[in-house]
Image (cartoon, rainbow, N blue to C red; front, side):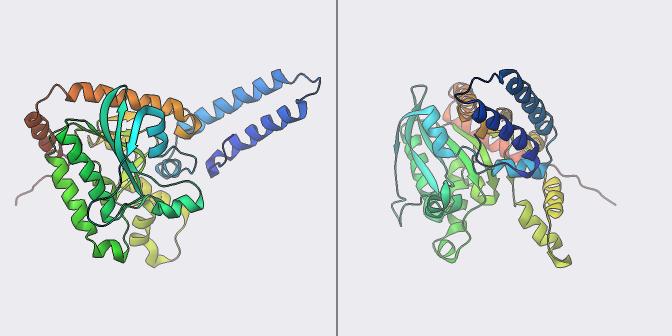
Length: 326
């Protein structure tokens, strides 16, 4: 049973609670309610399909942040074997907001790094809500350089509201750590596959997503700023902000996977189970694994020089402009 329903999922919640109640009442009693349950389950599926086929960007943002949604460690446990987490940046400390280590996907040795938000209040505080400090990015880069040395593909999972903006992080060189990651990843001599599994926020997300192939889960988001941050900058002076302002900002930012595929910023959209990845994490993980292996098989045919050349061209062609004279 899902623990948390979003506002637009309330009709689904009511039906599923009714199904649970019927099952509870009939438990251990000589009452046949199977036909009634089947009718309700069919209705739930149809309703969920209807709702999720026409989600707004703000609703997708809410799904991307769903507290039941699988995080990096969940996917690692589902798709990777022999995973060994490594810690520390060899300069300051370890950052729990980024998980990084060695493992195998379908018996292929890889290096995996990703943001980890944490579940429950205690773990979220420990993981800093998935907002990395500079040492987190330096740890990830240390592992990527290790992958380059031993010719292992790099897999990154993106799921952060952004890099931590605190004083300590700034004192230890937050902007410099992100910039170095961008520079080093752009010339890394091994395949890099990045997947946005939740929210990809600002430079905090970009620092792990300079890749040869960038994919997004169907209901994930990827943007330079959150809808709330955008709304606060543009409209806070007019008074208190509302969900309508956030919805307007999300629409304007064009932050959905569908928008970014249209802009040719990402390479593909990974389908999610109906209702979101949290409805069936195993099925979502299986799809992610398939996309990863297909991309690796393609990229392993290229020489390191070719990889870097194509990676450079990939980012140079993002965006468009026009000039006018007279």
